[in-house]
Image 1 (spheres, helix red, strand yellow):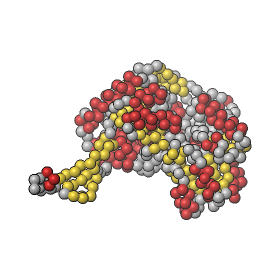
Image 2 (spheres, rainbow, N blue to C red; image 1 turned 45 degrees about the vertical axis):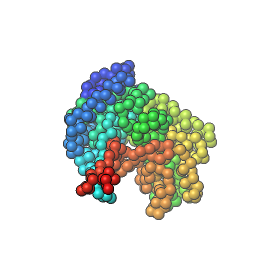
Image 3 (cartoon, rainbow, N blue to C red; image 1 turned 60 degrees about the vertical axis):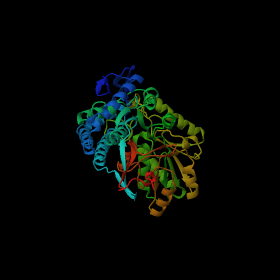
Image 4 (spheres, one colour; image 1 turned 120 degrees about the vertical axis):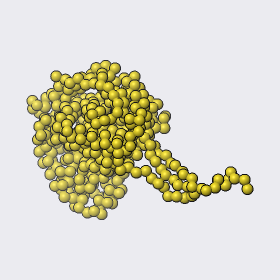
Length: 491
């Protein structure tokens, strides 16, 4: 039986005013939740309430350590419900249970980190350069909008909510239409932790309606978006009309580089994890593996052995490494790219279709897929697939390697596998990406800024400066002069 969800608007749990819709479990297509979509009127109500709430002394009057206390309690609330939340996210988007547990733990860590950053946050007394004291302070922007994706909801939402609350803002969240549960649960935890009514609202629904209304609303002072590049470009165009700051974490086509001296066991494990964990539904998935020609054959053999051993199955099974894709339409899109790669001359080494067996018939499963023989210019090597599809490409010289890595509109992340620190630094410094992993891949720290270059986005999340993204800077000059300003004094 599906669970009936309500939106959280202006401190109240109630049905949104739009049409009712149903979400489904990607593993078998069963109904998970029923809820009403939000409307433009709901957006306006939530934003107006947020503007009023952020100015009230119950929020605006809090000292930073008092806001931090709320965030600490939210971290504790997530940990108290960790297993329940992990199981709910598994139902929401079909990720394997061990992965959703890690995402829930990450969300708790995010609130804890920004709580600590909030209470130790210092404004700046700038160097004195005259008969005055100067200082720079940061004030909350106001009401901000957060638009989050379906692939890692609770982690993405925490990375937007926590720094915004730490900065003193109010937040209106538009979760992905098909995965609304985690944002709603975070709102419930926030309510229990002492977030005042109106400071945090969650409006599920279509991005083309709710998301656009949020971006256009005159009281929204910032948008934090994670999702597709085309949608991100549309948000940035609308934001430009308001001179509104944004952070956009968009698509990727990340290269992983295996050097001649790489430890192949480590490299194979890292490449497998980089592309096939999360079933490839990850913006930083290492979907292009550039392998030095001298070790290409050996790497290929070990990689394929590893791919054949991957366990694709029930997300509730703790042994599962790959669950289903988010829905059948997305699976069809992933398969379209594989067929395109074959038509472009690629050779299929593994996968390229649905797994067989009764348990896979109802779910949106797709096999881990490896293809070789394609040039980097092929569409399958240029465009984001957002699925478990890896292109193997040999390389001979660093000059040619970097030219191929850079021949792409994206610049989100990259991986390097080498035992020589000079090679790692030389290649890593040359790559046009926001993150470079060396002898590891797809590991994160909330203390380390994350974001992309080129068409992979703009702005940064995480790190202590993540709070400052939700503030505006103001300068103060305190006069120390004993006499009136000489310009206005008669001589």
